[in-house]
Length: 108
Image 1 (tube, helix red, strand yellow):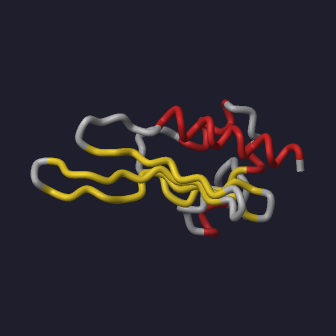
Image 2: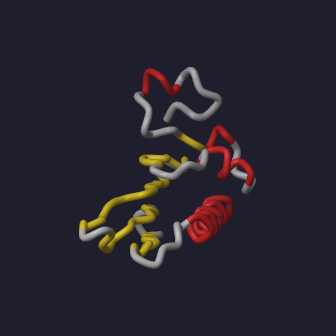
């Protein structure tokens, strides 16, 4: 459990580091440690158009960190590895299960 709590802290640290700053668009960091859902969303107006959506979505399921969506330019899996999270704890959930077997990360 201590390892899982450590990984929760590292995910929070990552989200706080990469939440994109903007004068027009608000970045919101959403952290639900009870259900292990972690997101960065953006909301606001730019050029008279509404902007609202998920930039990054991570979950912890079955003791693994699932990258559900990555709308950033960063390689989030590698960022997690840099924080000390082993590759076998990281699932590229945005890829089909069939493709995951060909990555260096966990399948599920």
